[in-house]
Image (cartoon, rainbow, N blue to C red):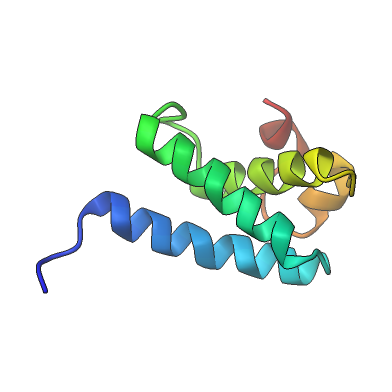
Length: 90
């Protein structure tokens, strides 16, 4: 197999982070899977350069929860990460 691209490495790391956060928040796997889809879209488009991976992970979990009618607050998501609440909101 060839060498992995930086995008592939970033996705693998992010997907592990999404799984960890979803587990910590006791969220269903469908929410983690949706968050992975959102993260992949953001990574592919390079639309959030300059943002930390963990901030993007937290935001994708937050959005996935909202879209699945399993709302969690910014505070709840931030409490399970090292990301300040303001970084998740913006």
